[in-house]
Structure formats: C-alpha cells, structure tokens
Amino acid sequence: MDKLAPTEQQRDIGATLQVQARIDPQQAAERCRDFLCAQLKASGQQALVLGISGGVDSTVAGRLAQLAVEKARQKGHQATFVAMRLPYGEQKDEADAQRALQFIEPDEALSTDIKPASDAMLDALEAGGLMFRDAAHRDFVLGNIKARQRMIAQYAVAGARRGLVVGTDQAAEALMGFFTKYGDGACDVAPLTGLSKRQVRAVGAALGAPGELVDKVPTADLESLSPMKTDEEAFGVSYAEIDDFLEGKPVSERAYRIIVSTYSNTTNKRNLPITPV
Ligand SMILES: Nc1ncnc2c1ncn2[C@@H]1O[C@H](COP(=O)(O)OP(=O)(O)OC[C@H]2O[C@@H]([n+]3cccc(C(=O)O)c3)[C@H](O)[C@@H]2O)[C@@H](O)[C@H]1O
Ligand SMILES: Nc1ncnc2c1ncn2[C@@H]1O[C@H](COP(=O)(O)OP(=O)(O)OP(=O)(O)O)[C@@H](O)[C@H]1O
Ligand SMILES: [Mg+2]
Image (cartoon, rainbow, N blue to C red):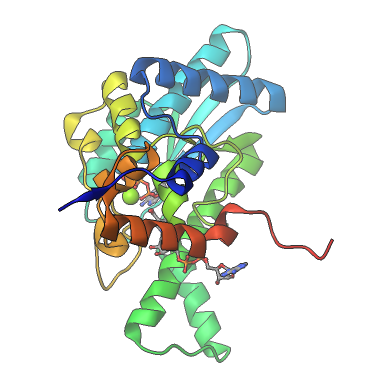
C-alpha cells in the first residue's frame, strides 16, 4: 500500500512529544538513569517506586530506577528502589512479571493484590445506583478503576517511604492517549518520555533485558472480559506505524487518519485540568 510522505502536522506532533528519529540506546539509558538520580536528589526524597507488570515499559523503567538509586548511593545519598507487583487477582503473565523482577534486581519488592479494593469500589458504585449499558461497558470502567487502584498503591508506598512514583508513559502511549488519566498516567517522574515504543525496546536491549520481555506484545490487560487484549487491537494500528509516525517516517493513509484523530480526541489527557482563568 502507498505511504504518505511525512506532513508538517506529523513533524509538529513528533516535536511536541519530543521524539527523535534516531537515538543511541546506550546513551539514552544513561540519560534516563541520570535523570532519575538527579530528580531524587533535587526533590530531597529517598526512594523510587514503580509497579512492575511483566511488560517491556516497566521492565525498562524499573531497571533504570534500580541503576539510578545505585548511582545515588555511590554519591552518598540515601536511595532505595521499591518495585511493586500489583496484580488484579491472578495474573496470566505472572511468569513474565517474575522474570522482569529477576532482571531488575530491585532493592525491595512488595506485592499487593488490587482486586479486593477494585471490586469493592465497583460494588459500592453499583449499590449507590450507578448503572452500565452492558457487561462490556462495566468491564471497561472497572479497567480504569484497576489502573487508578495501582496509582493509589504506589502513592501510598511513596508517602510511606519518602519516594517518587516513576511513570512508564512513552511517546507512543502519549500520542494515542493510551493510559488512564490519574491512573498509570499519574506519576512524579517519567523517564521514558520522548521515546517511541521501538526505542524503549532498544533501551531495554542495551540494558541487557531478556529478549522475551524486550519483544513482548504490549497489553494494558485491564479488561477482565478480554484478558491480555493487545494494545494494537485496541488502536486499530500497529506500534510499527505509530513509531514511524512519531519518528517522521512515511505511514499509510489509514494509519495517518487513525493516529491524528486519536491524538486530537485525547488532547485533554496530555494537559493539566481545564480552568476558567
Ligand atoms: N474533552 C475533555 N476535556 C477534559 N476532560 C475530558 C474530556 N474528555 C474526557 N475527559 C475526561 O477524561 C476521562 C476519560 O479518560 P480516562 O479516564 O483515562 O479513560 P479512557 O481514555 O476512556 O480509557 C483509558 C484507555 O487507556 C487504556 N489504558 C489505560 C491504562 C493503561 C493502559 C496501558 O497501556 O497499559 C492503557 C485503556 O485500555 C483505555 O482504552 C473522562 O471520563 C473525563 O473525565
Ligand atoms: N499487573 C501490574 N502490576 C504492577 N504494575 C502494573 C501492572 N499492570 C500495569 N502496571 C503499571 O502500569 C504501567 C502501565 O502499563 P503498560 O501496560 O502501559 O506498561 P507495561 O505493561 O510495562 O508495558 P506494555 O505497554 O508493553 O504492556 C506499567 O508500566 C506498570 O508500571
Ligand atoms: Mg502492559
């Protein structure tokens, strides 16, 4: 299929999301690690906190966080990385999450099941009169409750340990608005900002992450009725096309149309709350 030459609008969006067409993965890894180390010191906090799902983004951000606290300690600062397993009941890819933890080697690993609290909130909303169109609608709303429950858990630990919550948002998710507002979108530091998905994978490979995690098919895995649903299924375009768009390369007309309209429809998710002044 014919591809469209990159447009000015495409270049503007790539620049807004701070994407570079090419990166040196080793240098990018060092930059992200040093960023986290510097923010820890500048904030006067003593810990980094991050949920580890078994997906590539948290594998990479988690290893960077561990390297950052090790560097901070070398410089004489008190610093700990707390990795959190936050499954909703039993997680289908738990083995990948354990593999990620083995690779990251966090100072500390905590595990909290978010199912009881998530289900209790949905039950209470329904008891209070909230109704849904159908089972799929209810399941989608519960998915965002799960993401926000993980946010609550991470901020509780950050509060308890004088920590900063690390976010895993990268340019592909930012472009598609593919995160839960104030759920996984909420964080204090976001080291993967500006990286396309393939660049995140390249940083993971440079860090020595296991191949099966580096190449793993991305899933938000929030919908109980569609477990392990792939992000690409939800988007209707592939990450390769999203990355090409971000890196200023030609993409198909269909991909261009979907990406630009999704970006436009999710503007509010990348902005601060709307105010009257
Ligand atoms: N125009 C506007 N101006 C200001 N605010 C606006 C707005 N339109 C909606 N809103 C607000 O935004 C809310 C909708 O945003 P939000 O609550 O985020 O919900 P929404 O974008 O509908 O759903 C989140 C999407 O992100 C995906 N996700 C979530 C978490 C993790 C991952 C992953 O990749 O791992 C993916 C998830 O599968 C789902 O497709 C509305 O309920 C409303 O409160
Ligand atoms: N089951 C989980 N346990 C712990 N943290 C989780 C879990 N699910 C999601 N998270 C947190 O939410 C973030 C957003 O999820 P997302 O799916 O975008 O990233 P990922 O799973 O790390 O990578 P990928 O997007 O490739 O699946 C994760 O990076 C992680 O910090
Ligand atoms: Mg995931």
